[in-house]
Image (cartoon, rainbow, N blue to C red):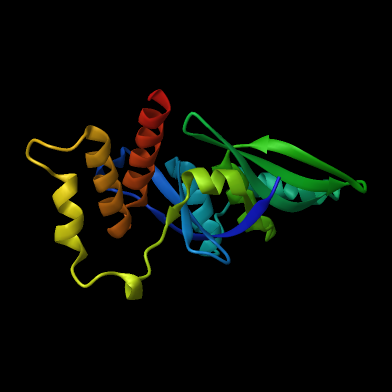
Amino acid sequence: MDYIQVDIIGLSTSPSSGGAYALVLGETNGNRRLPIIIGAFEAQAIALELEKIQPPRPMTHDLLRNLFDALGAEVTDIAIDDLREGTFFAKIRYVYDDEEAQLDARPSDAVALAVRTDAPIFVAAEVLEEAGIPADDEEDEPQSPEPARRAPAEPASGGSRLERMEGQLQKAIEEEDYEMAAKLRDEIARMKSEN
């Protein structure tokens, strides 16, 4: 399986998210973004470490890092390796006693550990191909993209539901609303698979 290295681009939320956040990963040597919806606790754990804020007591992910350290195990990398029915799957890969091993994990927990151990983050090429969203380069944008893109997305009576959703997806990407883009992407993929 081929893997592509990614970096954390940021965490975002919206008032309508109900406490969920979008963890946005970006290709290290490319322009695709991978938004993954995560919970508030995991978002806080990632943000605290990125900002180098030390809580007075170890958080769960700090405890996990401390356990790896105490056992003499080294986290080598994190791999987001599967996407099934809109759910991402990840592995924490590590070396212990000169043996390579891995643990199944939620991507949010794996990333929270990665930022604490300085482990690189990888995404399977197939996952990035399926769920990645190309980031628009502002220099390549047409002079007036809004009217041309909105017209097909909001027809009064024409256009399929799928076409309208694809227009909404494009708008969400342009506005960098990655949480909405991820939801639309998943719904579009579900609709296409049913056809």
